[in-house]
Amino acid sequence: MITVEEALSLVEAAKVSKAKVIEMPLLAANGWVLAETIYSPMDMPPFPQSAMDGYAIHYVAHQSTYKLIGEIAAGESVQQELIAGEAARIFTGAPVPSSANMVIRQEDAQALDGKVIFTQIPKLQANIRPEGEQIKKNAIALHAGHLLQDGSIGFLASLGVEKVNVIPKPSIAIISTGNELVEAGTPLKFGQIYESNVHMLQSALSLRNIVDVKTYHIKDDLKHTVDTLKFALERYDLIIFSGGISVGDYDYVKEALTLNQVETLFYKVKQKPGKPLYFGKKGAAFIFGLPGNPAACLTGFYIYILPLIAKLSGKPFVGLSKSTAPLNHAFERKGDRALFLKAKVDQFGKVDILDGQSSAMLQAFANANALVYVGLGQNKMVKGEDVVLYHL
Ligand SMILES: Nc1nc2c(c(=O)[nH]1)N[C@H]1C(S)=C(S)[C@@H](COP(=O)(O)OP(=O)(O)OC[C@H]3O[C@@H](n4cnc5c(N)ncnc54)[C@H](O)[C@@H]3O)O[C@H]1N2
Ligand code: MOO
Image 1 (cartoon, rainbow, N blue to C red):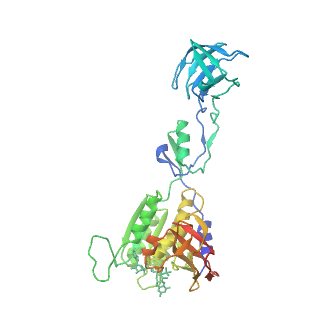
Image 2 (image 1 turned 90 degrees about the vertical axis):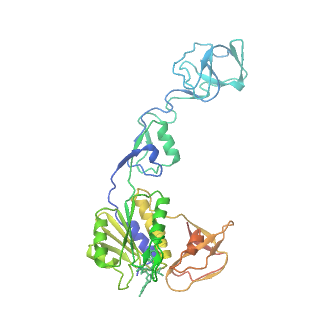
Image 3 (image 1 turned 90 degrees about the horizontal axis):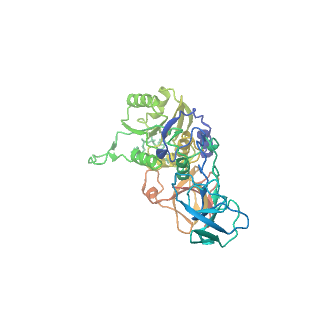
């Protein structure tokens, strides 16, 4: 059995096929990664702009009174010109005449009887944003690999960009196994339970804007499992099994993976919850077998699948954000597996490990805002000791 660290480095090292590129409207691309470098299609600003409300001046040395010849508002499409000794009323964002050599703030000037008089000695080019000051036409606006965020969308929009080529996010199949599972809305018969893992994973994906997700529910039957996996391998970038990955007589996932010639990259990790975790690859597709126990299923998703999805989407191999914080109480581990413990970080940044850590239970997960990672060798922790946290 391999360690958590070994398992994570195997997931990280798994070779991702070069992603195709998709074109999408800029307005839909927030959170996606640019597949290509974008070169600015224009100078920005496209014309010298006034940075202040005031007066554009054609300055003449030592002269402080100027003839006011007109007004230039933002959006003005006619280029006005000033001869030496002339001024025009101007507003922030308006085009500065090429013959003006400064803009005076209105606070620093007085207008009277068609004249403007400075009250401050101006500097040449003051309050003029030169054409192309932010970016010149054909200069690199954003590099390939850039993660588009709010500011990037605004920046590209300001350059008149309407469409961008991005790295597609993975298509995902979630295959839930188990004869005992029924959907909410149907009364439970003896021995049945409600499906939760699929809904939990799908909503976790949707929250992270991964929406090309299809779900399948299969019975504990070898042929059905083999056929569903074969179908999924032809269609999806990532296949996530829930359940059926342990050693029971009705656990068919492992056998179905072998019969579909999926290459096993690892099976079983020295961790709790989620020991019988499977990771494999066939062609460009990755396959995870998450244990059916719900808390093991969600933990495996957070720790191993989220960073792989990030990588498949063109981002760094990073999942939940990590930090350290002090424990609010002493803790002594049982067993010999690394632990991911549902925990709550309080408003003072102190960590309480919650009750109800069984991998069959989700209530603690529902109340947790972090997972505490307890590595192999870390047997006793004292109150106040810093622990590694994954933030939920
Ligand atoms: N003899 C052994 N038995 C088990 C071992 C072992 O090493 N030797 N490992 C145990 C561990 S640890 C885990 S974790 C589980 C994992 O089992 P499976 O992945 O095969 O999961 P299932 O048996 O299908 O289900 C386990 C449990 O979870 C419930 N479940 C399954 N799917 C869902 C779902 N979609 N929604 C809600 N609940 C689900 C299922 O009813 C079971 O109660 O194996 C141990 N056994
Ligand atoms: O590894 Mo399992 O998740 O303990 O129940």
